[in-house]
Every structure is written in structure tokens, then in C-alpha cells.
Image (cartoon, rainbow, N blue to C red):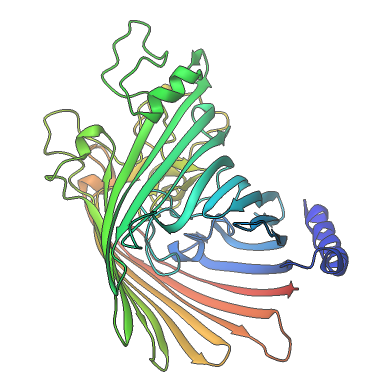
Length: 476
């Protein structure tokens, strides 16, 4: 793996000038490495979280990466056709693991985009740099390979004079074998609408995710076109798990969120507010559901050193307990025991703790889902999903070419509904912090240095860590 990564870096560096000559639209080539280190054998939360799986959890590690991205415009009579593609290789875990962290092709005509492969994407209206992360798809895990189409940006609806804009997406993905149900598929869709064409706008939307199909031991779940429509329309259905046809739940492992908020532009700032309300069953669509992540993001137009501020809160203790049916457990599932994770990382908010990370500091064992076929593991992978907390994020400018990012998070953790869970028995406070600085050099265009320090402390664990990075980007 070490040799493979080195060859990739050399090959990308050697071929970049050739690509720059032949494909001159918007070529970018990037190589670099980031060293992460910690006082424990695992990293503080914000060192690794919400980085699309770039850095490992190892207490001391180096992540090397090399990538090429390009795009071309082909003029037509009405709209240009835009072709974009790229690949990014990442090697980490002491040179033992190499992933295609991105590898995609996107074709866009007007507002419509067709895309396939692995690509970085966050669904929702959260700040990708300052938020704790979306409850749906946050950018915490390695991107899931998928195909689909989207209107990725708010687009004017005809005959509304700009007062109504919409965006949305629908995708089919592959969850792979590092899951409790092997070869399961992902169904993903979203739809958002925004109202207003002046300085004040309101928006609302819905995200829906379903992991379905798959197999484990003798269990083979429905992978037919009928099974797809059961998941698409969130129907109660027998997906093959219960031979007697008793199916009080919906096919697959389904969840989602409702999001709403607004935007206001003033002379001095852009104000953005968002609220996300999660659901794990159809009963989550209820005004009594008080679980949510909410935040206010302010982008300052003229401040000397502060660019953007994010204030956020999270509350997830209710878990649809207002209903009289079975209590929900966010990101967990009885049959799809690995739940809402991909490659051992939470797909949604990293504040929800799974067994893989929790095994470093709690009496839980990490599970190797590539070999584990134990049905008894259901509803037990996410061991802390009932939390109350607050968060502040800031982007700074210190001097030309020198920027910074600060994250400060406080949570009170209540575990799950299982009384045997040690966090449930004794709720614990925890603080997560990070401060990063990036330096770009005018004399060496494309060269970027970065450094960061993180301190986590509280009833879960105490840990101090940091990172040092160097990268170089060639653009044409």
C-alpha cells in the first residue's frame, strides 16, 4: 500500500503538465499529507469528524492523498453541457489502507445534474465547516458510491418570477460488505423549496434514507423492483425477513429528517437559520416531536478578522416517546445491526457515538461487520444517541493568506434507552474543541500549510491531539 500511494503521487505529478496542455478547462491536481497525533490511542472528535473519512482514528497516523479533478463546458443553443470528473486516493492507517476517497463523473445540463461514483456531498442547509453536522448526510464518513440525478442548487420555478425555487436529488447507492447486512443498497432522496426573491427568504425540505436488500447468513431480503418501490414510497411490506407475512415496520432500515429555516441579508451580514427534526418511523411526522438540531449562521461582510459565526444546539432525548408504540433509537436498527454508519463512521452527526469509537474509552467491544453475522447485535451499535448540547463555530482571518477555524462543543450524554448501557446509568458531560490555522503562500502559489490542536475533556474521556498538514495544488 505504501508503494501504491507513492506511485500514485509520482504519476499524478508527472502527468499534470500533460493534462494541463490537453484538457485546459479547469484542471486541478492536488497532493499532500496530514499527520495526526494524540495523547491517547484514538483522536479527539473534531480532528477526524466531518472530513469525509480522510483521517483515521489512530492515535498517531499519516494520511497521504493525491487527486486530479477536471471539468469541461460544451456550448449548446440553450444551456451549456458541463462534464466534471475526478479521483482522489487516500492512504492512512500506517500505510495499510488505501481508499478511493473520491472517484466520480458528473454531467450537467442547465440545472439538472446526472452523477455517479464517490463524491463529497452534504445534504441540507448546514454549514459544512462550522456545524456539528447534518442529522442525515453530514460528510463524516467516507462517501458512499452511488448513482442518481439532482437539482443541486436552488433553481427558479417557471412562471413564479423568482419567488419560488426548488432543489432536490434521488440516488441509488451500494453499502458494501462492512455492514451487518452484506451487499445492502441505499435509497436516498431529498426535496427543498424556498420562497422569496428579496433579502428575506423562507425554506423547507425533507430528506429520506433507506438501507434495503442485503443478506446475512440464511437471510436474503427483497432486492426486486417491487422492493425498491416499497422503500421509495415508505410502505409497510414483507421484504422476506418474516416468512409469516407479519410486518408492522417498513421494509429496510429507514430514517430521515424535516428541515426548515430562513435567510436574511442586511448591509452588514448574511443571516441563516436552520432546524432539522429527525424521524425513524412515520410517526416522527408530529408536532409533538421536539428532537432537533437548530442553528444560526452569520456571515459578516466587513469585519476585519471574523468572517463567519455558527451557533447551534442539539436535543435528541425524546425519540418519538410521545407515541404509544415502540420507542425509537436513532441510527440503530434490529435487523440492519450496523445502523446508520459506513466504514465504521456515523453517516450523520458525529456526536452520536457508535461502538467502534466508543470501544476506546468505554466497556464496549468494536465489531468487525465484515465477518460478524450475530443477529443479537441489533439496536446496539450506536451506544450514545440521546444527547443535549450546544456548539459555537468561527472562521477567522489573521493576515493575508492566514485563516483559522475554531469549534467549541458541549454535550450532556444520556446513552440509549437500554438500562444496561453505562452512559444511560450515569449521564456524562463532555467538551470537544478544535482550533485550526491554514497558511497560503503568495510566493509559492498552490502551497498550503495547516496545523491544529484539539482538546476533549469530560465524563467520557480526556484527550489532547493535533494535526500538521502540507498540500500543493496545481491549477490551470
